[in-house]
Every structure is written in C-alpha cells, then in structure tokens.
Length: 401
Image (tube, rainbow, N blue to C red; front, side, top):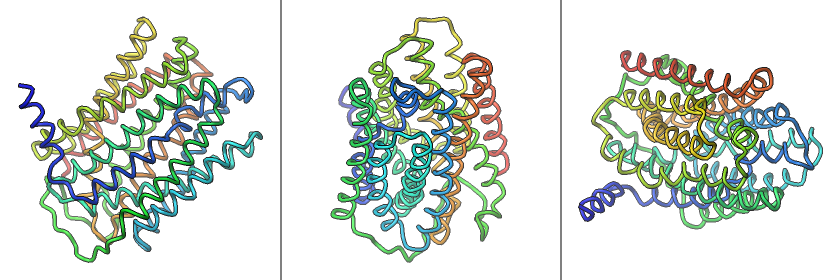
C-alpha cells in the first residue's frame, strides 16, 4: 500500500519540462521570504506603529491597487519584451523596495512605498504565469501550474512560520528577509534559466472552451470569469488581513501560533495538491472543480462563527479553506491559459492578476470598515454568502462553454 502510494505521488511529478521545474525552484526561493504581507496588518497595528485596523486595511488595500497597475503594465510588457526580462527586472526592483519600505516610519510614506512596491512586485505575476503556460504542454498544464503553486506554498509555509518567530522579536527584519530573497531569486533566474524565444503557436485540445477571440476584451465569458475571480479574491485575501487580527484579538492567539497555522495551509498544498490534480486533470470540466472549491471556501469562513476553542476553530477553518483553494485555483489557471494565444497570453494573465489584485484592494479595506461598524461575525456571514454566490456564478459559466 505504501509503495503504491509512493508511486502515485511520484507519477504526479513526471512529464514536466526542465524549465517548469526551474521556474518553480526560483519561485520557491522567492516565496521562502514571504513575510511582509501576511504580517502587514499585525505590524501596522502593533505597539510602536500604532495604526488602527482601518488604517492597516487601507495600506493592504494600497498594496492591491499597486498590484492592479503593476499587473496591467506587467502583462503588456510581457507581450512586448518577453516574460524573462519582466521577471528579472521586477524581482530585482522588488527586493530593493521591500528593504526601503521597512525603513519608513511616516504613515503617508508607508502608504506611498507600499503602492510602489506592490506595483513592481505584482508586475512579476503575469510574466511568471506566461512562462509557465509557454513551457508546459497542454496535457499537463494544470499540473505545471500546480507545481508552481507547490513552490509558492512551500515557500509560504517556510516564510510565514519563520516570519512568526521573527515578528516576535523584530518586525523590521521581515522586510530585509523578504527583499533579499527577491534578489536571490532574480540572480537564480539570470544564471540558470536563459530566455527561449517562442515563435510557434501551440494548438491545444483541452476540455474547454470556445474559440479565442482576437481581443481579450471581446472574450465576454472570460470577462465574466475575471469578475468572479475578483469576488473570490475579495473574500480569500481576508486570510491575510482581517482574519489574522481576528485570531489575535478575538481568539487571543499569539503571532507565532498564527504563523504556524497559516504555514499549515502551504504544507497541506505541498503534500496533496499535485496528487489530487494528477487524479482530477482532464476528467471533468474545470468549472465543476472551481465551483466546488469556491463553495468549500464559503464554508471555511462560516466555520469561524462556531463557538469552539480558538486553536481548534482556527485549524478547522484553515483546513477547509485549503481544500477549497486546492480544488479551485489550479483550474482557474487552466481556464485562462487555454483561451489565450502566444500573442496575447500576457494580457490574459494580466487580467486574471488584476482580478486577484482588485479583490486584494477592495477586500481588506471594505471588510475592516465592516468589522469596525459591526463585528467579525457579520463579516464572516457576508464572506460566506458572497462566496456561495460566486460558486453559483462559476457553475453558470460552465453552461456557457
């Protein structure tokens, strides 16, 4: 039984290109330093900085605004100068701006440099998503995206768990570690993954979808998909903004414990996502998985309404949210990449990134305002309802393909 399970796990990683593996290793290096954003709200509301939850929500919202601008220009630059150059430039500049942001003490300067950092940092994402799509084969594109997500989440698990320990002693050090891992990732990209021109259009036979229109903006069902992804992101990103504050202020959990349970999310993805995606890929329409995963995320937020001990309910919530994330997010990438061509792939990737960034912008600000006007419980009910609506939207979208 153990041998069979081991072979199944090993087979989930076979058949992926060398470039896909290298991109994932570079992503692992980068994300192992992910410490600033998960602890940004806690940092800004901590003693010495003394900002309100609403002010912290504004800063996290500015991160999202910068991400929208960065994603738009990152996608266009990717189609114009290539994904390799965009990744290299954004990683280097992002590393510098992380360190600079950590030196800021004035609230207006914190807001300004958060926006600039996010704009540079998030321009990386369309380029990286394009690289994964280019270097993968149609039949294993979802697994290629999952391998990249595995690297992200393994790095996330390392980053937030170590970040929780570092935050106990010094929030400032978080900015240095995040910045230096960006620079290290850029150097790794430069030395180990040389740019390869892609001149040949790849034909796909994936389970999706309608013929791709000439302009991404004429692909009306994709635009609806982008809107639904933005709603999903609006809710999902509360995991990194208002939910840690709820864990600390309402459930009375320590920063170190919060870091560990957030790391649990990444570890579970590392352990089970590739095997699950290998089993599911190509068996059903991708929207079935996306809709189901979105519904599980709705249940995850509603679980926080239960009157259970803090440590227990936080673990239940993270487990449910993780399963929902695993079931939905890899197939979201499959959906957009199957509709794109080599000439507009950066723009498709940019719009999906913008959708995530819009949710990241509006969500923390709106939900922090909602909590201040009512309570965390009201927010969790609203998130559960909105995600349920989003799941229905994805299910409807399936009927249109």
